Structures are given as structure tokens and as C-alpha cells.
Length: 144
Image (cartoon, rainbow, N blue to C red; front, top):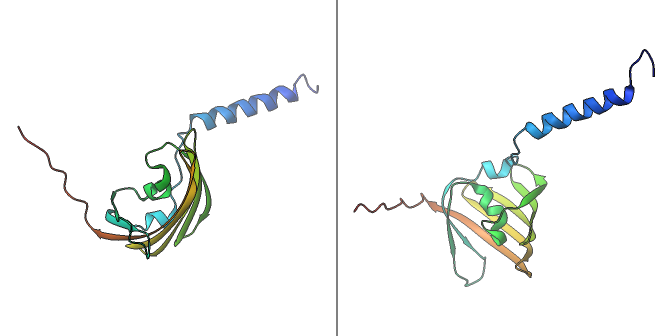
């Protein structure tokens, strides 16, 4: 103890101050560069070379493409790669499973998605080709 000061107390106060400032900041996931290049609108996803059903999505936020195996689930994400043409993310959904998705852009209207993981206790491994086919359909509002 020098000059009546307690170095441990000052360090503790500094940590509390920093921790308090960190806790006050809103938590927001960073926007991935590749996802910002994807055009919003109506998209079709299909497995290349497969006669499987085409999946149609109205995309207003390209981040939904990261969790195709866990659509709508609240998941934490860890960014593995983030370049203008590729985004790779590992995500964990408490109680629902986890996955890893890579999105590769050829153009803002054509992309490839490879996703794999565990959902509902079962493994999945999917490859999609995504194409933007136009604007999202207008919502119909019924007037009574």
C-alpha cells in the first residue's frame, strides 16, 4: 500500500466499470459481408441434380439462410469465415441442436448453400442452389 491507495481496489473498480459498460451495450450480431450482397425477394432453393421438391422463400433478411436446418430457432452463432463471396457460420440452438452453414455467392441472385448438423436428434447434410426469381408476393389483406 503506497500513499494510502489500494491497487487491488482500483483494479477491481476498473473491471466493474468496464463490465458495466459492456453489459449496457446492446447485443447485436455482426452483419456478414457476403449476406449484405444477397438481393432480397423471392428465392427458390433446390438440391442440384435431385428431383426433390423446390423450397420457396421470401427473403427479407439473408441471415435466415444460415439456419435452414433450424428455421425460426433462437441460436447463437460463431463466424468462421466472412468474405465478400463466402460466409461460414457454426450455430448452436439450445435444446434443438446445432449446425454449420457455408453460403457461397456466384452473384447477388445466385448462390450455393451447404449446411449440416443435428436437428431434433437426427443428422442432416443438405446442399442447395439458390436463385432469386423475383419480388416477394404481395400480402393479401381481406376486408370484411
